Length: 188
Image (cartoon, rainbow, N blue to C red):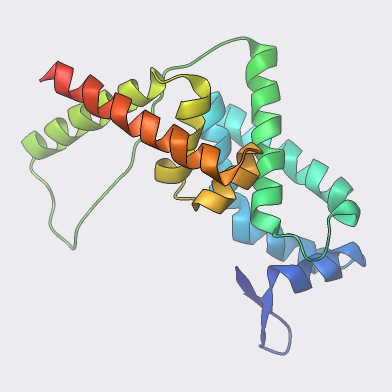
């Protein structure tokens, strides 16, 4: 992720980490702004509640700020930050001891065309069936599917966020996609 410095040159995350570690509050804010949208999506996928996700993200930002001095300057910020967000969201879900059904809504508008009400209903039903099938996967497999396809993380980023080997990401993804395919074919 790149951000603009005062001089107008792009700053990468590593430069911003270095500056944030030196106490540059603007650098820390730039890092968070660049990744908070994805962080909120990560938290939402875990807690399944918008307000809880925002609270988890806010607490993760505080924890990130406290820990910024300990991050390696050659480390990638995004997976490190997302791991903190994920852990905070998991803690919140565990402490609440509840599981809310997945209620993701993705708006996809192509051009200026407005889809017909029938198309909207059919797409929503299809999306709900898919998300329900994802929700039925075992947690380790579901987490990989969510990271790879809902959050659009790379295999390497998924491995870093979930603290598993890249090969494990591939095998869980393959297993999860197979189960989703079977589940959705059974519904037809």
